[in-house]
Image 1 (spheres, chains in turn green, red, purple):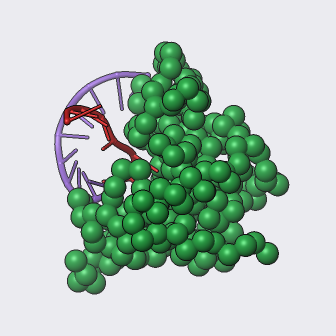
Image 2: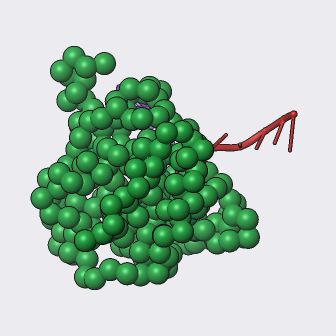
Image 3: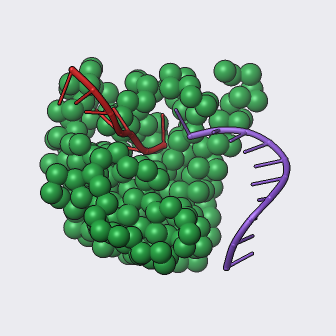
Length: 235
DNA sequence: GCGACAG
DNA sequence: ATCTTGTCGC
């Protein structure tokens, strides 16, 4: 059994305490491969009303069997976050709902691709790292834009091209051209996986798309949950 | 002090 | 973070 989670890791009283929690989580983040055979791979994402940073969010985790890629029923839940969106604190806004979605899953995934950064974060604790350490599950961060750091060198035009993402002298991730003639995505270690393995998994799961299929699946499931809630007269 | 800022 | 329609390129 694991040690019980510090309350501040998911519900700190203020952003000061949140920053302390992020440094604690970052210290426990593992950037080496530590997982067995992957039988189920998942994507995690949330949806909300446009520009409504205070209302409810809809979190979803969508899984597929690996390697046959058969999709499993997604787990989605609706909850009101403790905080609005604040750059650098996304984990505290979305992780509690994603943890609830995880707990509702009949079969737990062996690897989760998270919509957002892992290591490329001011305190090295993006949502992918946050969720990975809290759940003690291997996670990969996949973001569509930068929070911090800069891409070094030139990114090739071909699909599969990578360029290091450096922040304060540290390689925290890579810009990855998952598809020719598309903007790159930013891939990073979330927890219990190396950057090299993270890139390999993302490429395997993109299937001609800019974003990995599991993330797209989670995105669709979260949107479906939001529309279902709106259809019931909420918000 | 100023600017930048995942979702 | 969302939504819609048309349009363009491979």
